[in-house]
Amino acid sequence: MTEKRIILEMGAGNDLYGGDYTKAACRAVQDALHHSSIVLFKSLGYDHRDMRVQVTIGVQQPDKVDAAAVAATLPRGRAEVTVVFGGLDVHDPVQDTTHVIATAAVAALLPITAGAWRLSTPPSP
Image (cartoon, rainbow, N blue to C red; front, side, top):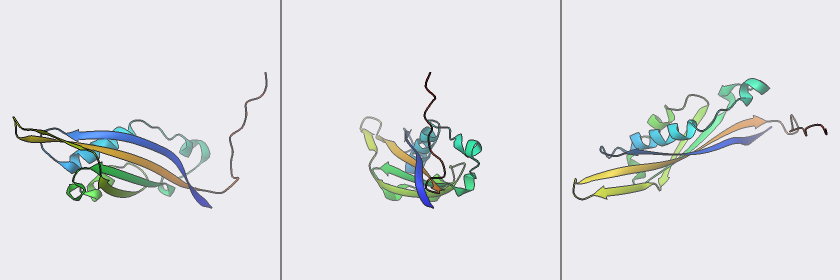
């Protein structure tokens, strides 16, 4: 049995006034999650607990993200969060604030037995 990526979603999140990298990262993950609906669990009889969820967060200051807090926002699966340099900081010199923009890639992987299922072709008219 090998693990196969069944979904990859991207998201963006921000903290416009607090400069909170973890808050921006959590919002990016939630944005990515709101783009998907994984119906195959119920359709094919998979258990959500079998899913491994790989999250990659990009921010300008990776050391300021609490990866455990980001992982806690995931509703299903076993979360693995990696924080890398990316995203964007936009400084407003007039207000002396930095707007933090985070990006997220969320991949869901399941252990799937090779040949256990395949897509079928529709019947000819």
